[in-house]
Image 1 (spheres, rainbow, N blue to C red):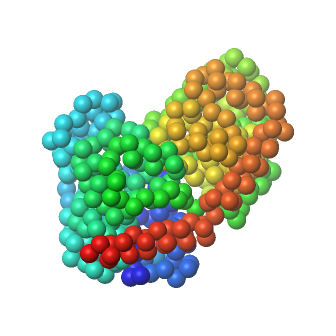
Image 2: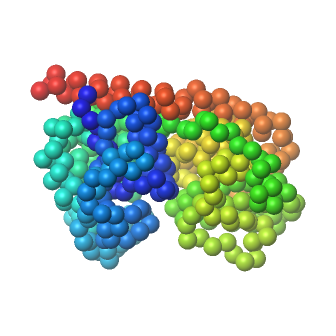
Image 3: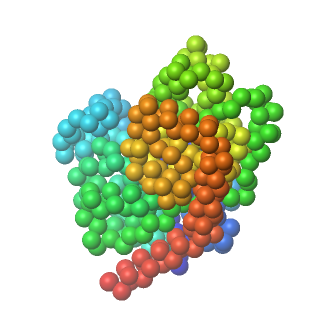
Length: 400
């Protein structure tokens, strides 16, 4: 095969986010196996920065052994974008014309799309992630016959856009992180002529965690629940905070909640003795926290995968997920590695169950660890991805 182009709205070694981490892991492990590839991205720093701001320099660089080709973004009407984005977030009707404005006024780089169109013959496949950004939509339109999407699709307003339905029906292939994601995509779009495969993503299985080291470093003696990830409303963390505060009022005890990761959320002053926000920590500290916790809680309702769930399992600890997230609930059931809740009282019941059945909790954690090792070791993921891309391009050549 020729080199593979991976296209994302931003790229960097220290960028947080599930889709970003999955892409970073994939390209690093492919590079380790001498696969020729290149990142095509914008000059924007990351998701949380100003999408009008070209933070990085334009051009080709090598970053941690990965070729990264960056393109400047065009200026956008942020106010108009926010107005329409509000409708998506709060489930209001959005017209096709508003869809066009939404796509035009989000993060975009016309220079990137022109480069893809002009240089497409240099690549065997062009792999885009995640689905909802201008770089994916306009990039896929520039060369649909070589386009493979890793959509990271959620059941959310953006996924129902008619523009996405039309564009995604024309691509060469789709790689999914879970079966519920694949089912959602086929419910929303006509993918009858698109090659598809559920593959997941790789997980670092080399580090299992040292719970005692975490407790000593952060001076935490009490049992605790851990939340790891971006602390914003979209991850449903406010529900977790509210439920935990209610649990402490009703049940008492010395249980703590430990938060790991960035975000603008501030823990209320009156709860800071019970809810400990450690902010960003190292990868090792995150695994150590998982190893030390009673369980990891992933309350998000919108996930296409969940690296932190897999990391908790690698550390041998069970998980608690939201009933309304088909993906994480499916993982918990398939792995026999955790429980799920729909409302406060189910949350309370699950917390009590983990506390009162520590042997079962430990067994769930080990079930989860075995599940990750069987399905999401990086060597397996890389080989499946390469085989899929090769099949897609062979079918393209036969069809042409």
